[in-house]
Image (cartoon, rainbow, N blue to C red; front, side):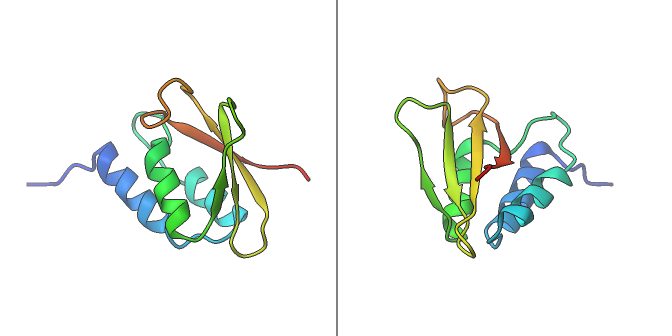
Length: 100
């Protein structure tokens, strides 16, 4: 009997790898190499938890549909856009390096 990999299994695997990611490049690589059957990225709450566990500093401008994550290795910013700002704890997210 073969096991089927579910989106939840994939999310857990992504979160585990992100908990040790200390650079913008590493986060982008982890998320871009992930094949997710629902075409969604890691839920916002899981991404937030994984990055804070890895030592990232997170801030969210008032009323903004995104938040900023600053890498623990060099302080480089990463912008995290929420797909559904009205439901930040269940929304899928996308990330992009912030231009400085």
